Every structure is written in C-alpha cells, then in structure tokens.
Image (cartoon, rainbow, N blue to C red):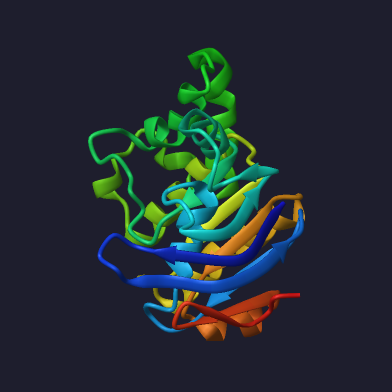
Length: 220
C-alpha cells in the first residue's frame, strides 16, 4: 500500500523534515509512528495523503508516485483516505450529522443514501444520540469520536490519525484507540502517530520510530 525509498522532505524554509526514510506498509497493517516532537511523524503523514510532495527519493501510495502525480489524482487519492487530526478540524457551524456526511457529499451521495450510513458510523462510535448536536456542545473526546466517524464514513482502505489522543485523558484515549483498532480488524490499514507510549502497551502493534527526520526502527 505504501512504499518509500530514501525519502527526503525539505520545506521551503530550508528545514529538513525527513531524510533517507525507506519504509513499506502492507494492506491491513496497524502501524504506530513514534518519536519526539519534530521527529517527522506529521510530515510523513502529509506525504502519504499528498499534503506536501517529496523533495527527493520515492513515495508510492496505492501505486501512485507522489513526486510526479497530478493534483487531480491527489484529490482522488484523498477521497480514499480517512484522516483524523489532533485538533479534530470539525466544522463548528455544522451539526454532527453534516460533519460526518461531508466525505459522502463530496463523493456525490444523495441525502437519502447517506443518512443510514452516517447513522451507522455514529452508532459505532457511541454518538447516535448526538446526530443533530453542534460540535461546541460536545466534549473533547466526543469531538474526536465525531472526527473518527467522519474519517471512516466512506469506508476508506487507509486511515491516518495524527496524534488523535494527544489532548485526551487516558480513559478517553484508550476508547478512541479501541475504535481505531476495531476499524483495523475490519480490514482498514491504520497509521497513527503518537507520543502516548503507554497506549502501545494496552494496544500492541507494529512500531515505526522516527528521530530527527530519520527512521531508527520498524522499517521491515
């Protein structure tokens, strides 16, 4: 699903975010990206979904060369990737229903078709009763669960989660991770960046460790 060889990312400021990273991730894996703040975790996730392009080396996602692929193909790729951010990135002027329905509307689903799907994913994350609430009325943990529901609503084969538990208490963090592990067991490839190393003990999986932009563990 994802292949990187001698991958390098240098931002316009001159900062080298990743250098010499070679990595292969197979379909159906659950992978933790670990490392200190600034290690390159978020940069690697941005490269995977096409938020930035590699400076050198190679990166292929679903067979697409992320250095050469056209922007139209990048937009198509993003429709096949679920993304969960640490700060949720919910639309606070829209209801929970509208936030979760957004990826389906982008894909052209009719309202009649998407309603049962949205209800199903909200039921999965335990928020079926908050369908018409606005994000500001929810707790931080509930907002993150809405973000997970939005990311999974279109049944993406790949889900990226960037520090999804970073602002949550330990019990809520474990609950959020339970949902991600559940998705993985249904066949979704999950790549999650985290600094909450205690979570790795309760939910073990493959660990890919970065340090100062370089891969120091978990390449195979």
